[in-house]
Image 1: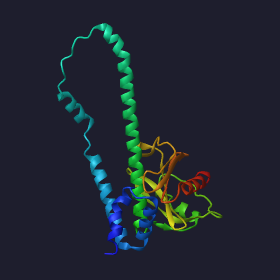
Image 2 (image 1 turned 45 degrees about the vertical axis):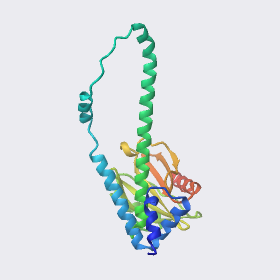
Image 3 (image 1 turned 120 degrees about the vertical axis):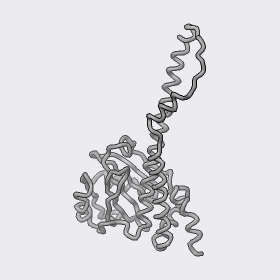
Image 4 (image 1 turned 60 degrees about the horizontal axis):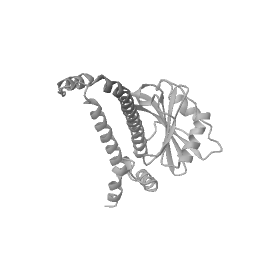
Length: 249
């Protein structure tokens, strides 16, 4: 069938495994093919359901402690105190190194999870027949629409004289925290801007940095107690240009 080739690429597209030009082609196709768009939304929902189920059944601290108590340990050998004195500093360095690596690994894993979820939200918006709930190119119409729907306020930039066009916005959620998702148009591409309160495990302490580990380029920063994410299948320069407009708004 005509769409078989596109559908074979959907999983790679959603997992961020396509080259940028292939990702752009899939994104453009979904805007004209309701069947592929619907399939993409279903696969995004499946991914998020699996991720939620995985979190739900993570072992608790109590269970980990109970298992640790059942693990038998080898009898300790008596160590001459001279060797112990020499070994303690090395052991301290080793433990500190292990703890640091574990901390860095957890932080990278959490960062990857957050950006992966945002990429899924962006794809779902691209594939949806109604990607925004308030449709307007006027920032003075879009911004007031969010009042009472999200627990914060924000400013939107003036786009006159730029290549960006505001399409509208919708309320979205990240780890049960309500936030704003704004959709912008740049040539034939669409860019999502996510805004959340900068608190909780999902967004707090995420260092400002560009990310290109998916089929999209991303930029994130914290400002006035809010965490901004800009996501799109455009160049890193385009992402930075929109980010600067938002930062200066």
